[in-house]
Image 1 (tube, rainbow, N blue to C red):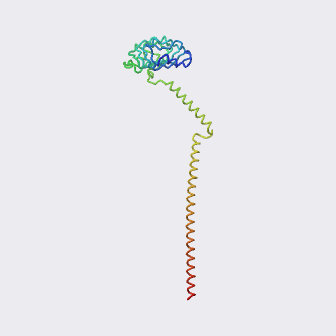
Image 2 (image 1 turned 180 degrees about the vertical axis):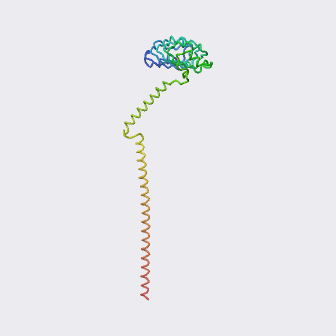
Image 3 (image 1 turned 180 degrees about the horizontal axis):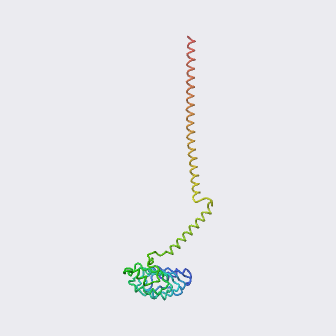
Length: 254
């Protein structure tokens, strides 16, 4: 995307003096110039120009309130002395993935008295013997180099911490909503348990009804069997009576 157009979109109808953060990653600079970025961005505190094709920082405007500058994955090989004039209050500078080969290139950064964090990851200078010790000696104001301090302790990720706090706040809000929707005295999960118990009771009732139905059918069958036996017994009794009557008649005739 064109750099001017990107800056226009980032403004979102604001004036440059209202902007504190500006992200221009992956846009194209014109001969090392960030077109559209001027001294009017006087309140700018964070500027990200990752992979925009920069070969120099000489064309940066004066950004006296700038604290964090992202310049990674460009083609910068020198000229860092202008940063002390253009951005005197820098605290974080990321130059990873540039063409910085020796310590003399970063020596001018000692003029940035507020600089606390410097990133040179994936630059050739990191391959020098005793690279870390030499950089900390050259730039005594540094606290972190490539994300670690002199004792190899990792720098805290402030952005990650803020993000995590935001997630915690969202979770708290969701908990509040849940508490409003459900009984205050009921611990989480009780309602689901109660519903589950009700379902089980309904299933048990259904099972009992099925069993009672089967029992009734069995009783009906038994009753019918008893009735059939009684009928058969009665028929046999009547038959015996008829036979006796016939025998008595025959005796009388004789």
